[in-house]
Image (cartoon, rainbow, N blue to C red; front, top):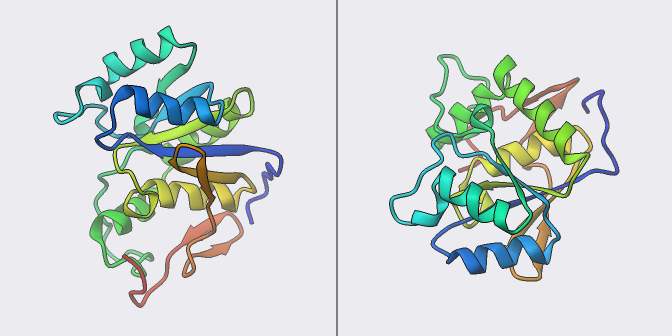
Length: 183
């Protein structure tokens, strides 16, 4: 496990999906979210106009929720040659797992944990279900640090995140060794 333990800290995850803003905001309000950490690398949506960075930040601000974009925690990363994360067949997940050892990722994750210690925080991406999204790998990194992660699935329904079954933690290093066992 990571040396920095945050055993009292909870961070939620949520996907905006194709929900209306009212439905999405209801999910946040249901879990008393005070800060939304947008972990989309590119904070825009052609299908969901309210989910663009500017529109979302303004709408949340009007309702008393802080918004912050965390580009350094965003997805769409490419796998590295000789990846130690061959447990992921999905190149996007493998690429994100490779990226998680970078200094940019660590700085972003440290900042997220620090800010989440001050306000109920949810990380948000586009995908409704976390297991189809890089939020699941991000949640693994948080769990490895001793942070409890709750996925908001529907109004009044959350599910605690458990470390991916084929994840391996050595010291502060989280990997997904092969052969392929996951998405």
